[in-house]
Length: 43
Length: 283
Image 1 (cartoon, rainbow over the protein chains, first blue to last red):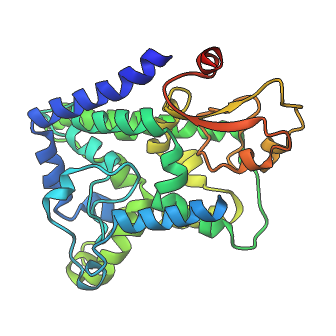
Image 2: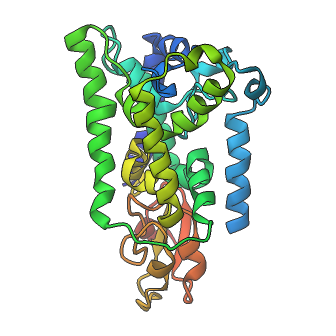
């Protein structure tokens, strides 16, 4: 269990950084800085 | 502790939504901080929001045929979940806080059937994961299905303020908004009777964090030798958990009511990577 508790956040940081390398954060940014019509209820 | 949690909830709601002037101007924040996911369910189209909703972000990346998987957002969820679990739901989620306020209204209270807690896992699988990915594969571009068809937080935090402030959006309203408004009103009305109905039945983010509860750094433990089985902890738990039996149930939002209710002091919280037995052995 101790191993899992160390592994999970480390894996999370690794995945997060890999996602940044794939420029996923730019997709998130593009979506988030424009009004999300789905969220508002327009579709 | 109850008061402390209330203040932390309020403080975090302001931290996630500091752009209060946008509630008057009808704009949303468009800066680079929006690329960062906050831990809780808080719509990124809320005029006050400064960060991104992890659920909306996850669906957006999954719906993109170029990516079809999100290391970035799942990485956030792994970090937040493995360290704090559903403490996030109980302490820093604005939509959870609003439901708790509604539940304080004097109204006949009801119990939620336990099986309904499983619905949120189906919503996570279908609306958050499958539909965005399937849309990306079959149509070339998926859609954030949970945000579009269900999310009452988006309707409350983004839909109602923006529709009130931006006349151009009102002209585009249709049956979809009626559906989302119905779900929001249903959550509001049921919140009078049942504690946090959205969190317990519908919230995919709570479903994800709940899976981390048994392994997260912050967790509860029950000293078996001290527990008399009086049931006082289960009686005070508004989430329908029996902490003496399952102190780290996926439904537990770490509100702390059970810790205070135990006459024997058998329940406690701990933070760290050592399990109970490992800690006892070390002592």
